[in-house]
Image (cartoon, rainbow, N blue to C red; front, side, top):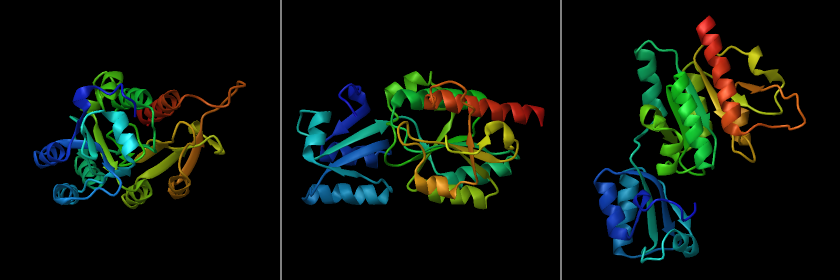
Length: 250
């Protein structure tokens, strides 16, 4: 997180953050100073627990990078994009007679990559994007701008544990494909026309071992040149459009 965040993306101070939570504001990320104490902090802690918001506990130096003003040990990033839960979205898709088409982004950290992927995902008809509560890019004004506003037209599900989310999808009859350079199968050798979810990993480290282990199939794009990998948003676009091609020809 850098200081180029727009001022309206975050708020700070114990009381303002408590009021934002109680007013139903969507909290993208919240950072709380390590070992913070006091009666007002106890109120904040209760509000976080009541609304199932998981804070990131950090040293005060990190909070000071967000703002030089008196943050009182808490900074919260606000999103005007609502968040959903995958266990609510999937049953609804089946009830509507749809073939679920989902995207899982495992700890993507670059805001512009995230925005670009959201734009492509909305164009191809992805029903929902699943992201982790911690470790992912903030859904701020930069992400919205890069997505050309597509984020407003696609459901974003925040999950505490992506591996558990993968398990839930599989139990719901959805096949989970993990994009990995070490995979044996090409994207052209698997069936995307049935209910499916595609996992894309972190820009540097790829998909976490836990999520990779829980996935049904590992898939990859063919690489013919000397450069051994693609930008994650480009790779995601190529995979999503192969899935669309299969769905059209089904």
